Image (cartoon, rainbow, N blue to C red; front, side, top):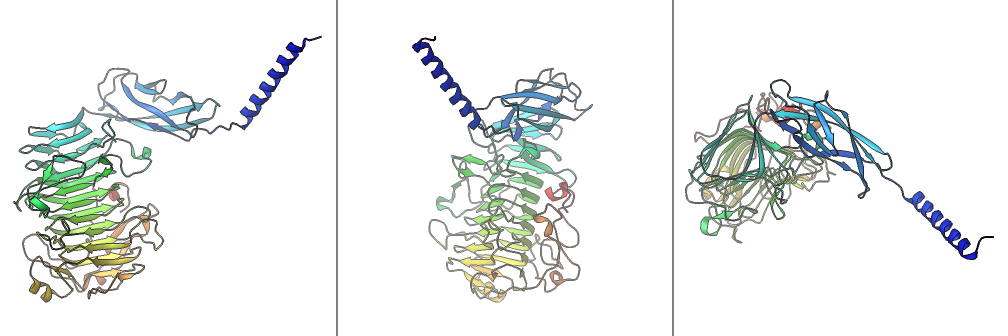
Length: 532
């Protein structure tokens, strides 16, 4: 017979086994659901076994362990070392530019997930960060990579070749996003072409983006033109000790032409998301034409004072406002286009003047903008907080003509918190008030199909409530075509405003940003994705 002590030990062991089995039965396993790769490019002519990037698995089981297998190694050109992808030989960009690989991850319960990636062999990788203190050119043949915040110092000119792509990492290793900052007194000459635009974007392949917005910083230009901040000098949030503003309305920060800023808006300072293109105190000597911001987490273009003019610029699906004006901005604009998404985004225009609590602060914000098309969310039930397509407030002046505003979630236009400026739709009354102390909205502009009406309140302003007959906006939510060209001879070609005669504006026979040709063709994000 078994001794009592031995029998007791056996019973305890059996109970322990039963409890363990029951615990294992109740412990469910979640399989991997995705795979990310930290980097998908490799410079040409690197030695064999150069590291490309590290794989990470997406799995609800935070303590899971994984086994990695390279299912497709691109004919032996790549190998896995645990979760690290490396090349197996020297690769030449002239021979082959891209390789397709497939990796499998398996957890401890033999649950697996496979994903394919495109590895791109690039020319010379130029890592960019810190201060640029002498004139420099970034070449289109190089792989340009922002690894940290980069500052073009006063007196220095940065030239970027047409066709160049400036990639950026998501952060600098310390949690802050890389950004390119052209300081006061510096210049950027980024003079692209329709068939060779200059692109600023994330280094992460688009297919691997969890959210297209907020994947790197943005582009910042700072100048010496007047602003309304006390002392005539301001600082962009997140950039300490980097001022903007001055007394030179004709200040020249260089050229931005055919520029694309995509997938940015990540924080460059503690909780300070950045705009796609920030213009602080930038003067009218600067040329900004054919520039686009797409899928930025914060605003598209934001003007902090200054006098810079813009022409042929567009903003697509940003997380906040498309065009934001403040601090005494007094520039001109023509042929501008914005699309506000239904799930993200706020307003197409958010324009303010008040500085230091003064609704009549000087210089008074006074944009003079003509031929603008603004497309709202297209839904009265959109989740985005885009309650008005245009929000003008806090003592703003300005002159707005040949506008087409369609499909706002609520109202097309709201004005509030006025100072002493005259708000009018009568040009003679505006002229009597004198520049810049009037807010003029042309009654010939169109506000159509905004779900709460044209105007939030009665300001004595009017607009035409007619369908401008734009070609195709239905593709916004379906990934299809977006074409804001008006039908020839339709309402967009009637009662057209006369634009100022000053050498900047072009007199048109149409309202809105487009005639029958589409200036986005060939270079816009929409063109690249086959959506125009």
